[in-house]
Amino acid sequence: MISVVRDVADAYVHAGGQYEWDSAAPVAVARAAGLFTSRTDGSALAYNQADVYLPDVVVCRPELADDILAFIEQHGTD
Image (tube, rainbow, N blue to C red; front, side, top):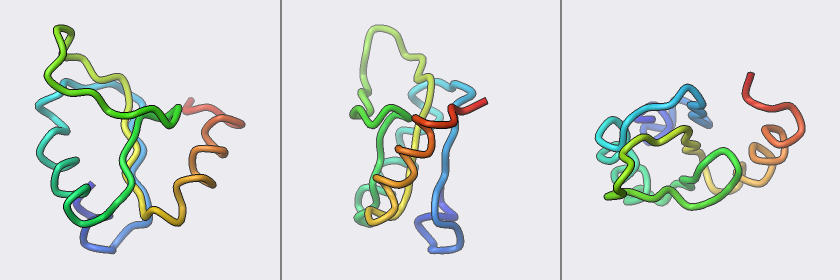
């Protein structure tokens, strides 16, 4: 994720699952940098939930978000 924040990569897509604490800080930094963040289906990332497992995350430059989410929808994350 930080490679996207540093403008070294265009996007970060993680569909292997992780816990909230694994992505909360990097997502906060990405959001502060003006980047797009969501689940792979485009829904908002929800933190501080009873179930702390976060199945997927996308971080990218805002202008790429629609194309990346459309690609994921069409091709999946496998």
